[in-house]
Image (tube, rainbow, N blue to C red; front, top):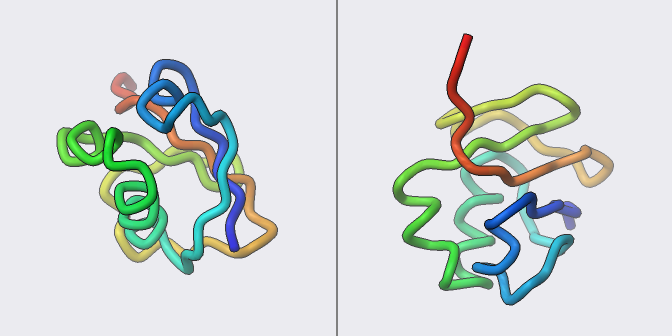
Length: 81
């Protein structure tokens, strides 16, 4: 299981949860698991979100590994440079 912190306004779409556990081995499985467990997040995930894994922010990095001890944060899509 991976512990995922749900940041900001996304928490309301996850039934107010700010931290959940999901069975996942990579970026895509985290998003799939969150969408399955919290249908309110599905549309937002489909539009695009960012995932911070151990302090590095990713978007569409589908096969980036996630370990049970990883620090994972789901956040609205981050842009900038």
